[in-house]
Length: 167
Image (cartoon, rainbow, N blue to C red; front, top):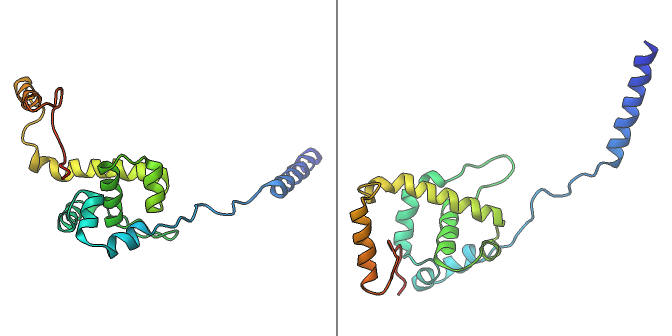
C-alpha cells in the first residue's frame, strides 16, 4: 500500500511538472486578409471576371449549381469557405500559372486549403458531369489515335485534348 501511495505521489508530481512546462497554442489558424474575391471580383465588371477566371459570371453561376455538393456546412469553430469562393479558387488556379502559394495569398486561405479544394473540385466535377459529357470510357486505341492526329495536324503533336480557350 505504501508503494502505491509513493508511486501515486510521483505521478502527481510529474503531472504538475508537465502542466507547468506545457505551452498553450495561442492560435489555431493564421488570420489572413483577402480582398481579391470579396471586393475586387464583386466590384469590377464582367471583363475583369472573365480575364481572371476564364469564364463568364453566368457560366460561373451554372457551374456552382452543378457542384452544390462542394458546399460545406457551418461548424461551432468557424464558418466555411463559400461555394462560390471555392469554385473561384479552383478556376483561378487551373486558369493561371500561379502556384498554390500565390493563390493562397490572393484568396486569403492556406496552401494546403487550396490543394484540398482543387482535389475536391476535380472529384466533384467528375461525379457530377462525367455521365453527361463523356460518352464512352475507356476510349479505344482507334479513337485515341484519331484525337492525337486531329491535334497534330494544326501543330500540337502528342496532344490528346484541350480544356479551355483563352481569347
